[in-house]
Image 1: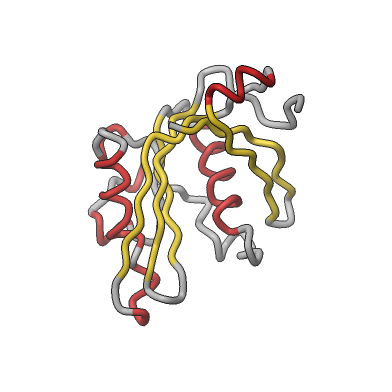
Image 2: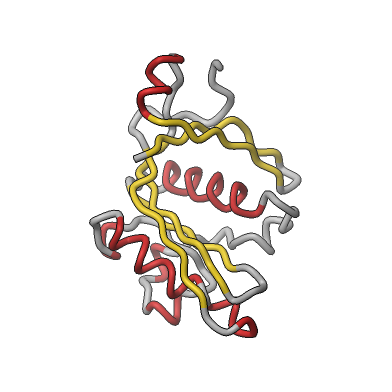
Length: 154
C-alpha cells in the first residue's frame, strides 16, 4: 500500500499532502505519518450524494481487511446510516465545516482525521467524501506510531 506524508494544514481550511510508496519514502528519508490500508468508490442517484459515503466506507474497510470495530474515528454525516458508535465519530465535522475549499476538501478531511487519531491515541481511521454527481470515495488509514504534525524534510 501507499504511505502518506503529511506536509501541512493551515487553519483556513487548506491542507497539503504527499503520497508516496514506502520504497520512495525510505529512499528519500521521509517520515511517514500514516499508511493507506484501503480505499473504495461508490455511487447512487445524484440527489442522494450526501449519503453516498455510507456506501463507500464499508467497501474501503473491507478492502483494508479490517472491521468497523477496529476504526477509531469515522465521518459524522453518515453516522446514523452506518449505525456507528458516536464516540468514534469525528466531532470536528467534514468538508463543509472545514470550509470546503475547492479541490482540497479531501486533503482537509484526511489531515483532520490524522490529527483526531493522534489526539485519541487511535490507530485506524476511515473517512469518506461525496461529490455532487452521487458518487463518493472512502479511505482507511493507519496512523504510524512516531507520527508528528508539521513539515518533514523533503
